[in-house]
Image 1 (spheres, rainbow, N blue to C red):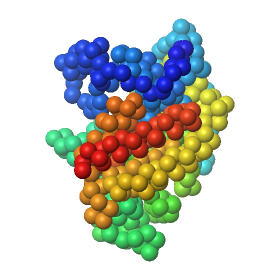
Image 2 (image 1 turned 30 degrees about the vertical axis):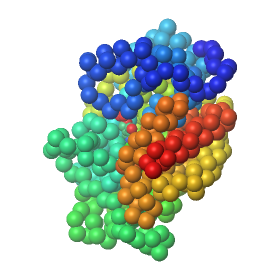
Image 3 (image 1 turned 180 degrees about the vertical axis):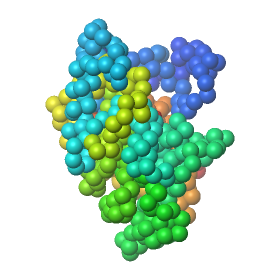
Image 4 (image 1 turned 90 degrees about the vertical axis):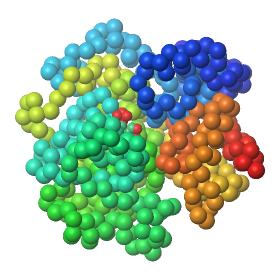
Length: 450
Ligand SMILES: Cc1ncc(COP(=O)(O)O)c(C=O)c1O
């Protein structure tokens, strides 16, 4: 697709939605089930970090289609691979038969996934399915029934994954009973330490408590199949744990034969300046879940696991669309782009620029309580004041809206944070523009409050 945006980027000339968009919003509201809907933005087309709506407004995408477009919208190599594969064969049930793009993809994922040893791969269509597969595999291979997950976690919406969630009440309300056997423990959130301690004088109590309290008094470790972790909590607020936390949690798990499941659905595929966020912490997960940016917009997910854990019994787990031909072609092309354009290195470098800008913003505005992240997975948290740290929820929502009116698409996360996740391939000028508009939007919202 040709990029005709020679002039100003971004450029918003109408209300959002404008006259054309309004009719689509009305239709959607009438017939689409109530889902999450963050803004009345009606997309027409997109390329790289740019998105045009149906009223001709041009936006910068700092949400990457909810973390799906790490290499940008409609990368020409991916579009070509998808078109060629679609013209050849679209679907042939890779769980029952064979075709090259699936075999090539699982080989590649088995080789690049985090963790030591030989691996195998189960393919599916969404993050939540990759988690369901991990839950089933962990029970199947260990013969144990219990799971551990974290407060602040988000792993998906199907019943198993939902049972691991603990980031927002609305995800779970009215769905009980969820899948039995999940114990939640607090995550290491140093900005809001659940134990009101200071790092490092805390001695990493948030990790040690798993062994010293939970395993001792509540949870027989030899009944626990797996612990699920996000190396950086996503939906929970872009929480980066101190560097020793996850290695210590993993060590405790390993000492009891508990599998660790690394959920890289949001943080993976180069987003944090490493191919997998687990690499920042030297983790050696038994199972890794990936989705979102794995297919650059085609629905595909993978559960990659140590070879010995495999089901080994045909029919114990399977699906219809997992390993869909077009999705596999898209994924292979995505991995090629990541290698060829050194996308992981780009994320590391531009992430430093983002953090520097965020720190300047924090210095300027008292209501910005914390800025954090790794690589290009960054967030800022709004508070009523820095001492009480009361979440400034309305302010966060107002900033997201003001930012959209200026032409930057961004999403909230946690209670009062904004996540900033532009495509890793974003041009530095556009990255700088987005950060400037963020600063201006905060300034405008702060002024309006006075
Ligand atoms: C860390 C994490 N795991 C799992 C999921 C679920 O993925 P999906 O929405 O593709 O089912 C998400 C979605 O946001 C996620 O952020």
